[in-house]
Image (tube, rainbow, N blue to C red; front, side, top):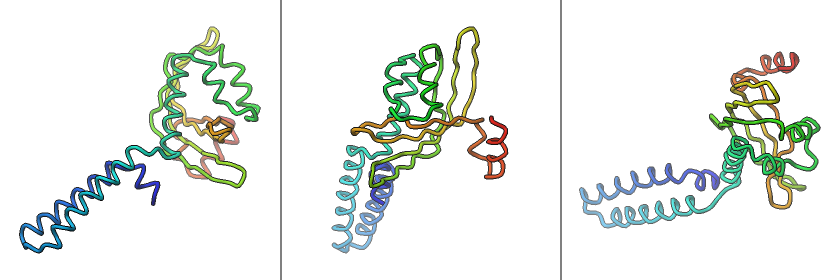
Length: 190
């Protein structure tokens, strides 16, 4: 509930404004003083919640900025900044990608949509899973390509900073498949 209040200030603002206006209108029509006080209370409470939501960053807000910032760094080929975001104990596949990164030239690295950001707190730390659809245009040596992709990142907090632990990419429709369809694609190696 707290996450909803902090992450949706516009929704809270609209709902609170509608309720405040409705109670103010009811006060104008009826003349009952408690409705006036309720209207003022709702307006002040709504304003307070909107300001709190606007100025406090949740983990999801920070992670959303993290992935957009990383996409921008990829697009501008700032390979060292991207490599610094990879966890020292990342998967072997991600470590290999980190080594190949300087040889890849990105012309476009755009996030089309973020499907979900799940933050999990453990006794040993905090992890996050981000699923999204992206579009990239790259050159690797003498080859190049354009591709929409479904991407899943697993991140972990290390010394207060988010670091990428694993990376998975699939065809863009992967998110919409049922479990059987995903298993079929996973076994084919796409």
